[in-house]
Image 1 (cartoon, one colour):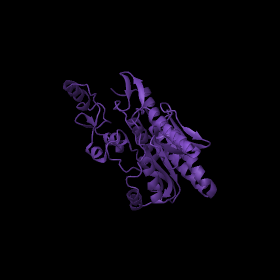
Image 2: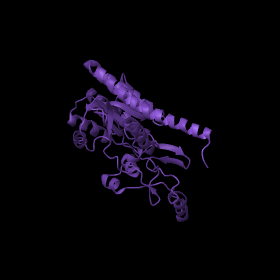
Image 3: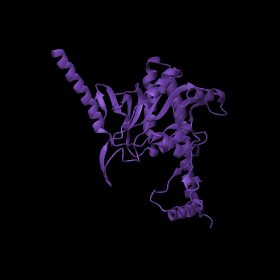
Image 4: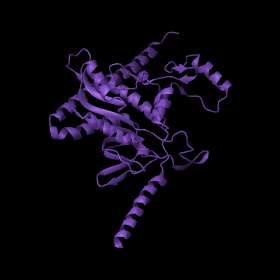
Length: 339
């Protein structure tokens, strides 16, 4: 059946909306480059301005269920702390605990979904790696207690979310043009960041128009791989063995899975989904928008946030014990001084 004139007109309008959104992200990209370049001309303002610009951008693409804060330190219940984090994205709905001391903010690792480091054109690679390591060494504690549909549980028995590892992003003003130079940045920071933003000339412009580009080290890995990496504390060997993502409920019988395969997989009804047998095999590459790095980041980052969408149960007892240890030590010290 051919389209009517009205239907064709409506389809063009919808297409125009998508074109406008696509164009708007490209325009936004160029404007951000221009703004940060202007700020960089005033040395004392550039650091604060960079963070303000990036927090404005990330606030515009990250769901409101997450809070964003500048200049924070992440802590765990074992009394370890991170180096200062320029921007932290954290869940304040289920972990509403930001320990604030004057202007300093201390956020428990259990709440943090994303940690962002904002840099200029140059940086010390060792310090950046130390920054990332100071976050990765923090240990979420799976001993929170809550009442769920099935009754009272702890994080230990709530296997859907025992831990998370924050997504790490480097948002930089670094500029690279040649692919070899970009690859060199990726090699030097291998295993450090999940996303790296940097500047480059747009293809075909000969340096006339610069924009932020996106480097994703594990872009070709499946979402199942990413899920294991960000959740449950799986070691590298377990992560690398994982390829597809099982999306069938655990209580399904073989007949249910066969029916699912027949109705969904074999029918190719949902063409955007890629299957390995009856498990999803999509990667972050499937979320890549050509010539539009910021729109790509929007889709890729938010997809990863949905993989850690189940919040951790906050381990009140573990943090209370940490403070009790300090109070006891202080009391013992005072008693010894008195003696």
